[in-house]
Image (cartoon, rainbow, N blue to C red; front, side, top):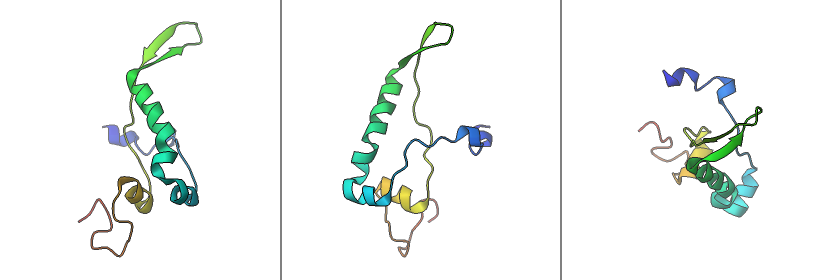
Length: 92
């Protein structure tokens, strides 16, 4: 049932956007390290102050990553050449 909500616009949130030249210069590790740090902190739990003054502790994690073939292949360390025998990680 969850898959019904994956493509709803209010469930899609951009957490990182960067120029491919920056990725070439600095690498994925440098660019996404702040995001990874924040996800680790969220997994440990964060305190949130509600508008009524009540403080609650919540935790969470990253569920899904979406992107184009080239970007995800680069991120995951897969072949980046689309002339390769298996250019897509989903179909073999």
